[in-house]
Length: 296
Image (cartoon, rainbow, N blue to C red):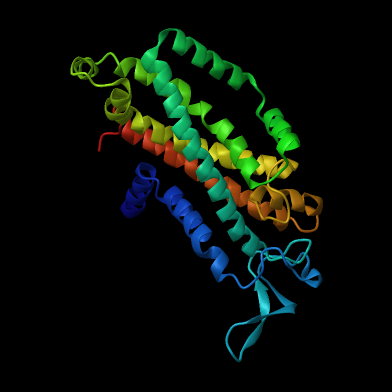
């Protein structure tokens, strides 16, 4: 009983399960597409809607020079006879690439925007913060649909849309911290020593906001994954037959009564990744913020 209690306390203190799920996502994105025996976009229509853990009599796999076995589908097949597990692994790579580029560029732009606004203050701060207010007032889905109508659909447009969502989430919190940090004595000393504004922001202010930026990025990544899935689901994001998770959910919605796994498997993947990122973000916030840090 004591061992169970210790294990429970350990799991509550450290996000072991969320980290394991996220590492699994990274490994799947990195090597998953190379170890599956099936093509991501090609299937055998005779194998459509095979259930979980099914073996196909219509598809064979060459496992060695002399041995050929019937195809095994761990997570079943979709309406076109394509292996869902293979498409899930390819989809993890696409989602990870899109979200990583979006959150990285969004964080860089958002931090720069916030530091300039908070450091200079006055009319500069007023103008920049009114831009943020206007941007926050715009409905995300409408912006995405307008951009899709103008530029078409694809990976590049999806990355642009998610970047436009990501950057604004950094501005208010980071700006508030800059307003406090710029009044510190070490900033005044740097100014007296002749340090330029750029040097002060990069060398002295940026380290002070880095912890908060990491936490915000972690929490926002889950939102971007949901946004990418939503846009792909409504047809404004990545297009079939590219196996984005939102596309897979959308393709399976017409078969929920007969082949529920086609939608539920990618939905479960989205749920696990998003909730893991939320738990990890909360843990990072507690560990990196001295006011919230747990006493070990």
